Length: 194
Ligand code: SF4
Image 1: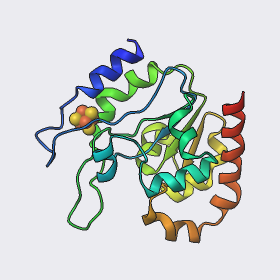
Image 2: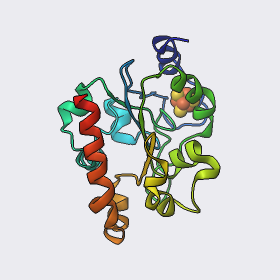
Image 3: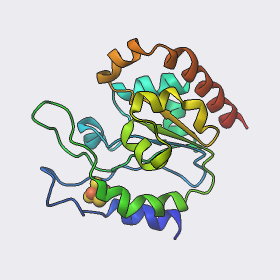
């Protein structure tokens, strides 16, 4: 199936309509030239409203890790974003977002990835993307998996989610911004300038 055909089906998907408190609005941002694929959790409320992935403070931190500005992030055809679920799952009573519905990856992920043959680096942003992509190769928890980031190169790189909720995690784990993020910036630079 062509990428255009998969994207058209995803954008028309309403499979979770009966379970969400709002109308599904699939957000997926890839092109045939995608070489760096960013796989996060699911759109938050702000992205649900704008339709643009990582159009929020998490995106600002992610772009810092990647070493790219907003214009490059959205404009360079080598950068793509496909979260584990494409629709905002809603806000739980504690104020966080509900987990991404597993149905989304089951329905769409294999077909979408098959239609993206040029991806050479996949960022596994957070525990959901890591569990799905790494399966038995994931460590006991997200911190251990990200700490072992070198083990998954060159095709995969696990990172924490860039959410403000992980600011304390980043303070407790300074090796991520001291060692992993500089590698990531260098790798992204190489891919974007190749
Ligand atoms: S989250 Fe995924 S499966 Fe559910 S409605 Fe959106 S695109 Fe469809």
